[in-house]
Length: 248
Image 1 (cartoon, rainbow, N blue to C red):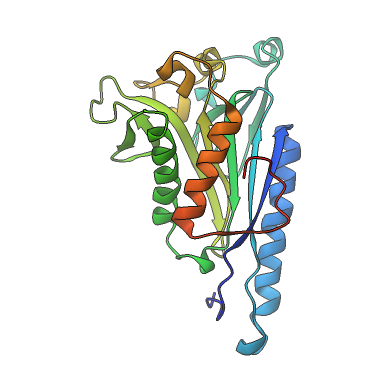
Image 2 (tube, rainbow, N blue to C red; image 1 turned 45 degrees about the horizontal axis):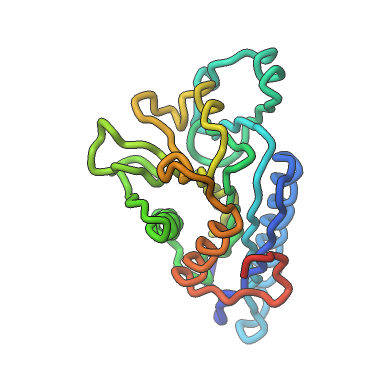
């Protein structure tokens, strides 16, 4: 698809709070489809009349839920349907990349719905930018984090494979350079829920959180504020004046 003559880096940021996974999936799908539909409708207009749709960044927490990406294995969920119910958790097979992961209270989930025609048409670069925003956020809490070659996401003790611990998982979907799904940063979730899965299909790495690493309570609102700042800086975003978030 042809890149827009005039790019649009306006992004509407919405803090949805604690919200049901299916409800949020439906909402981001609606926004994702609306951007694609606009792009298709605009492409036949004269170049002078074309404009780029704005993007969205949804921030939220979910009740306990396990999600399996399209390249994942059902066997990486280690508990039965009845055990799921006893854990007050749900399970969804979804259309992002990656394997199985957990979402729950105390975990900051971000869904950037960006038209990459406004930034750069490179999914790998997009993932690296999201990782970098997380790495910079963690650095402000005094936590050194980084990447492991061949593994998407952000890790603690990333330079030591034996002790490496995942602190942020990522999985995205893109169509016509429009993105959905995103990242899940462990701020202070109940880490015992990760014992019910093989996280991201990786069975030799532990999972951690900001609170676990620091040994103290962490403010979710503070993490949101810092993370939004780094996403805005890296992508050179202009925050839409209608943004519904109380941490800016």
